[in-house]
Amino acid sequence: MLGDTQFSILGDMKWMVGALILAAVGFLLRRLLWTKVPERRPPAGLPPLGSERRAVYDGFAPEVEARIAMLGISLNDAFEERSAGRLDMAWRMVRLSASEWDGMEKIVAGLLNTLTKHVANAQVVVTSRSIHAHRFKSRTMVDFVRMHELLDQLVFSSRRRYLLQLRLLRRAAEIVTGEFHYIYRHAERTGDQSPQVWDQIDLNFHDFDLISKEAVLAFRALLACLPLSVLPRFSLELNGLLHGRVRTRSRPVEL
Image (cartoon, rainbow, N blue to C red; front, side):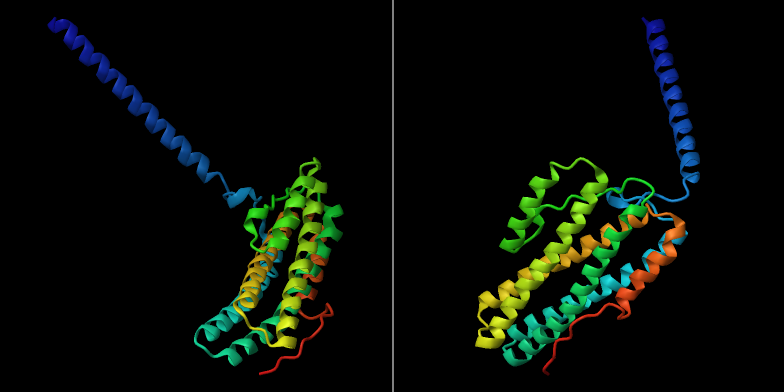
């Protein structure tokens, strides 16, 4: 009986030593493999960017993100003024936001048109992101994106799905901007500043913000697939959108 017990203990010890050795080898291999990876893959399955493509991205995307953030700040200020009972000042902030919105919509539209133009230059298949209706808040946009979801299921080519996504975003930007201007002109003409007007402005901006961010992600996806020889021209066209070489309508601001 004692011999059996000793044999069992020795067997357990051998098993534990073997497990520790395997764990140590696995840990060392994992460290060695990670040291050989030059760049971790970004989240959400997006391909990594090299230094040349990263320079193009950093020269455009942060500026777009900053401008949409500024638009959001202007509208948030308008809502805060309204909550404080300063209705005249609140609506002046909406007027300022309307002017900023026009300029931002032109940049988004120009970006999507530029991406459509350069899809033919992609060296590999462009990966498109799925855009789901539940992420939008305005009823018009929810219904519009639901129709796109049905159409997206019928397209199997990645390149065609990407082009379909660009068309969706382009049309969505037009729709939500049109809705915003409709409610804005209605309020300007009638003086209606009811809660329904403010709620609609809030929903419209949420959807426009989402569209703008999806456009930037679409830009990043295509950028990873373009040859280096195309990057200078691509970057020049994008910078033209930011520096006023795309004609935009100006809206008078009354302060």
